[in-house]
Length: 531
Image 1 (spheres, rainbow, N blue to C red):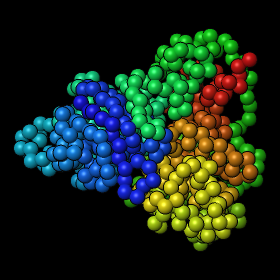
Image 2 (image 1 turned 120 degrees about the vertical axis):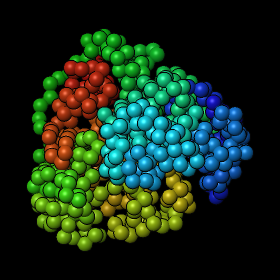
Image 3 (image 1 turned 30 degrees about the vertical axis):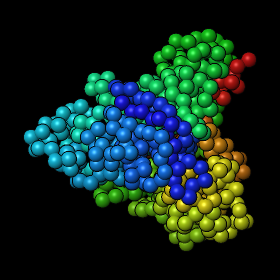
Image 4 (image 1 turned 135 degrees about the horizontal axis):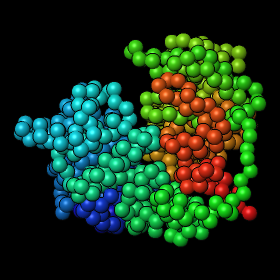
């Protein structure tokens, strides 16, 4: 259904090709997941399937890409619209109408499909994806999972034979991600649609995948999930646990791992842990009664918390729980309708922007909001000046997180993960006592997430308080000593990471699910408990 023949793509001015030597075939009715290191060209590869690359993006393409027998060299995106449905990483960025029902109909209107057929297909897609109760909802009020399913539905109404998705679960909480993946599973098994998707959170998707297409340097490898991830540094915790336990081949489903885990549990020596999960360090930020409303809706309700030197806090909760609103209110730039925040001897909201950044740093979900210069090196140099840091400090931080980002590259030409790390380097260069990060692992592979975790742990050890808002339960399990869970704007749980994560059906990491009731969260925890 999709054929890549020795595909390479080189963008003008780039030092290296975005993808090189890819040779693979995706069969009809197959769900194939594209994996690879951050910046390895996954998005570029996906965009070749409907001709956006190179017809829209530019660049020199060699080799061949065919979809359902059509060569993209001879067909523009408009010609392929009825064959390939494409869902971008941020589905809201592609919405063009007011309501869910209108959004589902829009692509068919663009293709000139008759009204009777449009009406029938809209009803079919509403039922297929469980969107019937949302048909009249404004698209700007949808949760992350609802928006993702709506975007998938809008792509499906044209009845494409191929559905291509760029990180469809990256911004979703665990339950919303499961809903989206279950919908894709139905499309593959019930309708025979071919699904090609890029995803970094392999722990979510590998149980659904038929095959893995692995990009890593020149060329690509394709095979079954267990085969492709058994020795990969990008492997999710379940596969890593299989390596430690000696399971060959390593399992890709939690159920299979639990069946194998009896002997491993018997070998583990786990000592009971006590404590609150907090820190006895100096209070760096004190918030009480923080309330935030948007258009009459309460996003954050009477939240009080303290952040102490040395703490590593994961802020979790479903999409729309109020995590982002709370972070911006604590930082001082965002809206705050009630309550009090003190960072040291001042309220961040009352400080000048430069002074505020030196007290409370915030890495936003959308890194583009902070990128405005022409090259990576110009951005790094400006960040050094803004932070009062030694020249080269920001670039050094960026290289420690992700070596090899081109100095002359335009920041907006970088992958999403690369842009996030660039903005993180800006924030860390100022070395604020309190560091807040909003979904910092989107677009990052496992290796880079490990580096990020190491850097944030180092910051906390040096006396900073670090808070990460995240849906990435595996990262939270590795990073956090304390977890606070929000629901409908309220803090419903705040305690030690082991206690909160291991006891949660939604937020438990893979190791905790396999080894329950043992209070272990990560593969490193398991290694530490082996004789």
